[in-house]
Length: 298
Length: 267
Picture 1: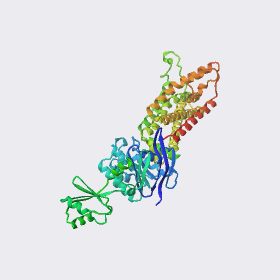
Picture 2: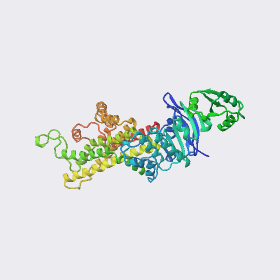
Picture 3: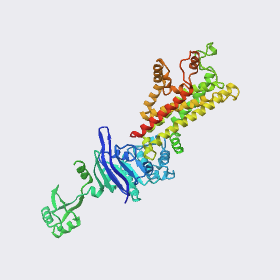
Picture 4: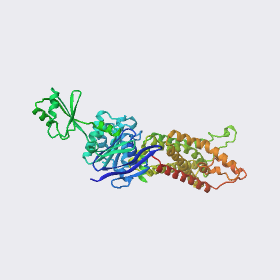
């Protein structure tokens, strides 16, 4: 799998504030690459540099293995920071400008507007749109002309829950069509649900990057309860194959951790065999949020 | 280049302010000149009041070109403000960024605006030619001297590129519509006159005439000043060619300064 984007050592400061400190990573083709970080961590600065609206102080980047940046941007659908359109023009006419700038045909304007749910309002002026509608139009504009890559900066900003779910679904669909998607977000949930890869930024430093399941390796635990908790604890001591599982009781529930490779069904079977009847059995995953907070607070 | 202009046209053709300002220019230029020709607008009283009108009422060929050319050079302010509004709007609504994000290079964004300045100037010049030809025809009774002193129409084109070019440069460097328009009007109406006064009051050549807009104004001077100048003992004057070169020079300065600014700045 080749890289769509390669970033080497990008740095950028605004006066005394260093917004990016030598960030490097590659974005593989077909991935959904999440750029994750708290507010002010440098996500938008990074995307701004990649789209040539900001100039890096040092470092380089290359799209599609070294395509001239101006040509590359025509192959990329982008939404950076805010939806930017001509306020006195309709959604439909604004997309004509976007398509022309990208040197694309005008034939897919209607289908794109349908995809983002703005077809009925296509002749309304941009200035009459709500925040969510503006955001939808920006996503629609990014989709014009079937770009190979999408760069989306906080794409669900201003959307209602239904809108967020729709955009997520849209991103999954596009990803399944082989489109590479780079998405900046401070919403962990968003990244966890749709990304294959992630880069985590904190105050301009790249903390970690790589496939989501490697970077955010999740520690699972199993939650148990039985009528006879003492018997349950006794039974777990003889759990087969486990590498010294540890457990503790929190709020009347027994949490079994460090039991990699042990499934709830194995636990259930074992307990039954020991004559302990479980009244509660759940596999819990450590939330990304917990992991993220651990990472950025290090 | 054609596609730059085509996209620029897509942007402005649906912008009402564009049509209002263009309309004002197109309506006011002939109306104002008509009233001057008829002595309705006058300085020092017209024939009806028995005074001497200091405004030039000669609209036959060739004086129509210098006379109407001067008034057109004052009305060009409408188009300068238009250029400032259109350009600073891109910054206000951040569409300048989106243009680049969607595939224009920074230079293409700049060149689209430069082309707009040149095309607007060209259209204004053609309009001046049409209105001037009509006035000259009516007042001369024939079109036989149409092309006498016709170079003044070309002067107007240069002047227009100068005024609109300064507007473009101000809009690009200041980014805010109100402030840029304010500074532009302050500069054209007051600051340049003050600077010119200071520079020209010193001994030697009147170098104040070479201030950015004044260099072009010298090509199409106010008729009254022109008359007074010809009566005065000749202080040092420069030829039209010198002012043509100066005008082109200032336009080159706006272009280069704008280009450097846009390439080096974050958007």
